[in-house]
Length: 447
Image 1 (cartoon, one colour):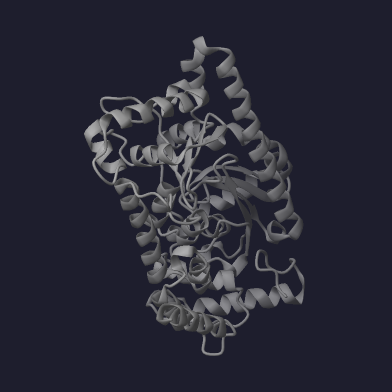
Image 2 (image 1 turned 90 degrees about the horizontal axis):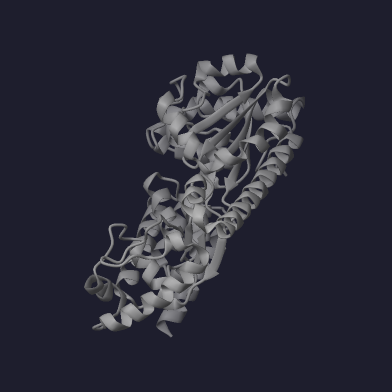
């Protein structure tokens, strides 16, 4: 069976046949861009699905260059503040330096597919400029279609794309391997690491090398966070300076999905919150400008909440946060968070907004604080769940819909399963399980 992550090893009849089938598939792209999906025998499924997404996102295979998303000044400022800036020495030592004479390029991009660093073989760099494979360019699926960096982010998994498997025809002479980079604390996608070049860029050992490099860099980021957190605790008088220098290392996070008690991560340290404190931070995280005591009570308590009860809860919450970072202690009048938190629910919404449904589904571990009855939490929970479901029903693949169907909230979702049957080929072996699931729902609801 062909490996779904990478194509066949470079060279040989099988690899040549793979390229011929991919090239033949490009004859049908105009039909795809018009909304008609054509089956292409022999094309890897993940490439087939990526071409479908690329066509639906209006990527143009005939435009030779990727769009430039940031000018030089914007790029420099963005790179300076980006969480991946601190681990670039690891990337350079393990990937960039060995690539200078190997005909390979090493690229590091952000979580939406914009390339931040491109380095490696100087001759290949000059060639790659012709298709705008340069720092500051947008290589997301929405912009250039199927490519290892963009597709790895779309699927949140390691990917190898060979030659004509690329959606954009100008990229057919190139092959590439890409691996997403995850935040070692929150699990959020921070970016992507890519090797691009000739067919050696998709050799099996190349994938192993990039994955090992990403693992090493993630471990280094974790170590640097712990070291900085220790330095901050040991030198409280210099806290503001240390915190400022650490902004590029941290994305303070709040994990709310699929759990009754949130996990709060600040400055590389994590604590499990009580149910009530989870609700408070979930609500405040949705109102960066803050809320009055009256408004927060209305969002927090199903009935009439007491301001005195709220004040007592806030005192206890401040003590918990104080242990993680004094700079993050919630303020009052209005109640607000002095630091930016990255809730996993917010990351899901961000992914949905840019059409990255698969990543949103990977992040979505279930309903937001499912047992909470706080009005503000219920509203946020329903919004996230509704938007994810609607996005999947509109543009989701069979695999995405089936994965969503496994969630508790989709246990009795008939429309979802009917949508799966509509997408499945008539002779697909998966149809039987979906039909059986529909029969289960009917039996349970009519019993």
